[in-house]
Amino acid sequence: MTKTKRLLLVSCLSISGFSTAQGFTLSSPTIKANSTLTDAQVFSGFGCTGKNISPALTWKNAPKTAKSFAITVYDPDAPTGSGWWHWLAYNIPTQTTSLEAGAGVVDSNLLPAGTVQGRTDFGNNAFGGACPPVGDKPHRYIFTIHALNTDKIELPTDASAAMIGYMLNAHRIAKASFTAKYSR
Image 1 (cartoon, one colour):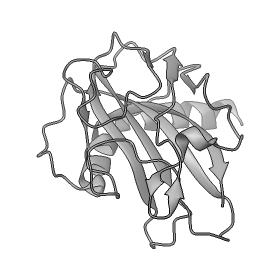
Image 2 (tube, rainbow, N blue to C red):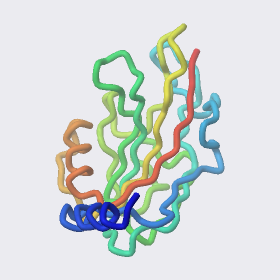
Image 3 (spheres, rainbow, N blue to C red):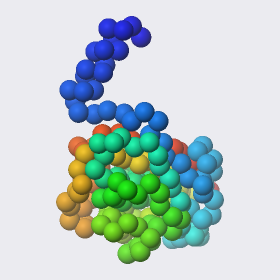
């Protein structure tokens, strides 16, 4: 890339208000990137018999301008035409840099104070594990940490995943992701 193109790209990112944090990363001691999810992260219901435990997550090198974080887990391969939202947690304070395994249960006391769990495509406000159709190709589960430019996103508790996603995209200044797969 030429120096002129790099300067233009940096200028465009500055104008748009979006930047990437150098080295912003998301990882999990529970799930390695590009690995296969274990029974612990598989849903319990819809014909699946997993433990439905949200994985431990850790992030580092977030932008210094971040005012809060959000976590999402999304399956773009679900046969819905719009994918499937497995977990949405937002209003996570910036002093938080990790979540324990199991933090995604309903009414979790493992999430930092003020954190809100949004309604997933399973219809509840908690982590919902993998449960692709039997015989389908392996589905991708994208775990993402979003660094946001706002302290708090104000939404009703029954807001759709699409509305939460809209608000995350409107306030995101950086993100980091990893993907794992699962089939049955």
